[in-house]
Image (cartoon, rainbow, N blue to C red; front, top):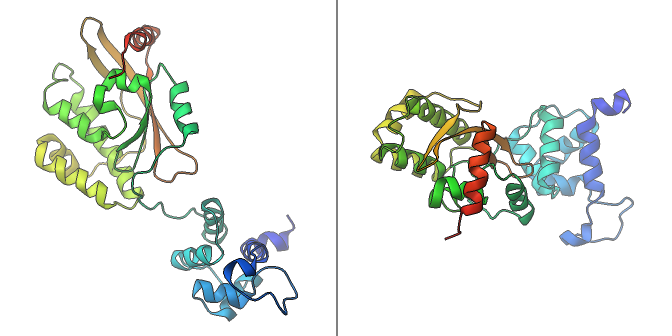
Length: 277
């Protein structure tokens, strides 16, 4: 890209998107138009900005628009999520803030990804840690708490407070890391009403969560190895890893990988024996 184009990448992108909009589809008359797409003043009106300032933006003289203005421009131009993110990167050199969304269905392609990860248990969760999709291995390990509709954080502290992991010396360390990761996800997503609902509920029911939440620790790293007690099979060690889901702001793909070949063998046998409820 020539230097002059790179220096005005925002303006060129705005102009390109404007030129590719069909005015008729938005109810604008097609007469007396010398160039394709919307006029600058039409985009300015749709985005509720000054026509003169919008013209300056396309010319590279409008400065750095605020996030609110960029959102209005994205709406006025009918940009896709990918185009909106690109607009923010061009204007502010950072992606837009992730906004909390209500739970949504997971596309079949994402479910296929989860299924292909077996024998590793894997789920896709929201910023509030509600499970949107899970593979068979997750339900083998967690039962009903590892399937769609469960909440990872609520399930974790329910089992912890019930004494299921009382024999493990690092249970508080694991809990502390879980809460610090939840805090990072919650605030990165805008701390929506569902997040507040989960926090309020656990604050009432779990003294340990209440204590750890008040510590305000935050972490973006993977946590310590999680150990499960398996009746008649001994212990199972799994290493947690989380990834953002491309094209789905706020969603995370969480995978528990067997720590050793012995752990993997145990999981494979359990999956083979598992019967869906």
